[in-house]
Image (cartoon, rainbow, N blue to C red):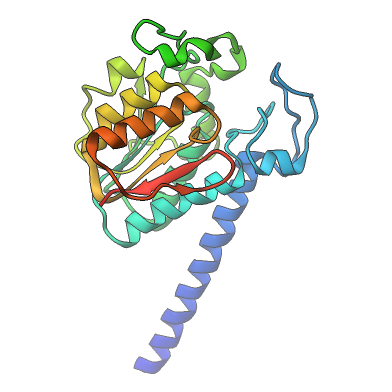
Length: 262
């Protein structure tokens, strides 16, 4: 009888693993919209769909809920699954969320694992990027991303996107406002995964200064724009130098990178 029950348990476990993998794989395809292949629509590129460009996260999709591409989505999944498996304490936060796709994946992963102990935080102005503060952050003077309206996504639109996946619940919290106002004083006690997608030196350094000390040992910090913008990269290097962080930075794709806190 024990052997029969064991076989049933193994079969059930295997079925769950397959269903989990199928669900997450389909979800990622929907989030980047490699299914319906909506075109790039931002003012800085040609209005077409190119599969390689989309998978690398090099375009601004008309309809997709994320622009980070598959490799960076896969990395986010890896980081979240690792902290769940290893019981690294803390919540998940993304600073700079656009349409919310990465955090939709994060909430789906927690739900699929039955993890009710963690929250997913979305920090964003929900009004686009700030104008460069050249006086305090001179490196940003040549990077004005506030001129692109396609980067401004309202809070209600992001919440509606979560609702479309049946993932808008009390494990999802929104921190609305500029990082200098929201990330220094907030309710978060511990983080397990910190994902930064703020482009600018200002946004990156404010997020690291405000949140890195809350990241648990063994937790992950992901920098989406590390390879894309020198301003972001300089903020990371200066922060790490000031904190004497020597953990190697691991490249994800052409722009994303991460390290694990020791």
